Length: 307
Image (cartoon, rainbow, N blue to C red):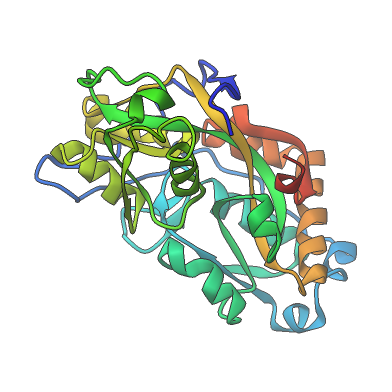
C-alpha cells in the first residue's frame, strides 16, 4: 500500500456535474441528489441466449433483487421523490436486466449490512460501487465494471493545507463504515502514519462523513474519487468542499457482488455487461453521469485479487 499509486483526474470529471445540484445545508444533513444528466438511455431488447444463462428460479420469477446503499452519488442516490434510486449503478443494472429479460428491483440498505443480506438470501446480488479486493474475493465473486481511485475531501479553501496521505497523520478523518476506504485509512496507521495515527471516525453513510468535515469535527473525509469529485462540485453549489489531492489515490476496481455459489447469475450479468460494452450502451451510461474516465475495456470477474 503506497500513496504513490495514482492516476490523473481528467478535466471532464472536474466539470460541473449536473444542472440540479445536491445541497447539504449549513445546519446539517438535508440533501437532494439528482442524476447528472437528463440523457435517456436506449431500451435494450431481450436476448434469448442471455436469458437462458440465468438460473431457472430467477428466469421463472422474472425479477432480480438487488441491494444497494442509495446515498453515494453519482453511483446511486435517491431522486427528488425520495424513493426512486438513480445513478450509474441503477442505469447499468436496468440495461443489463433488459437484455436478460428480467426486471431489476433495487432495495436501499445500510452499506455495512449489504453483504450480510446477500449471504442471507435477501438479495440476489449487490450493486453499490463495492470495491473489489482480494479480501472480499475470499467470500464473494465480483463482476467488475468501473475503475476508481480515492479522494481526500476537505472544507473549501483547505484550511489544514492537506495535499496527500502523509498530511492526514494526526488529523481527525471521517469515512464510510465497512468501506474499503476505512481499511485503507487503517492501513495508513500501520505505515505512513504509524508514529502519528489518523483519528478515524467511521459512519453509517458518506454524507454523515461529509457532515463531520462541514461541522469541523473532522479535517477531511476519505472516499472514492468519483464520489468525492461529485460532492465537491455539487453540494452547496460547489462552495463547501474541495478535493485536497490533485491525483486520485490507489485506483481500484468496483463491481457487482455475487455469492460464490451463484455462478450462473454472475456469468449472466458478466455476459450482459459485455454486450452493453459492445453495443455502446455502457459508454452512453458512463457519459450520462460524466464518469467515462473510469471505463473498463470489458467487464471482468475478480480483478481486485490480481492487484
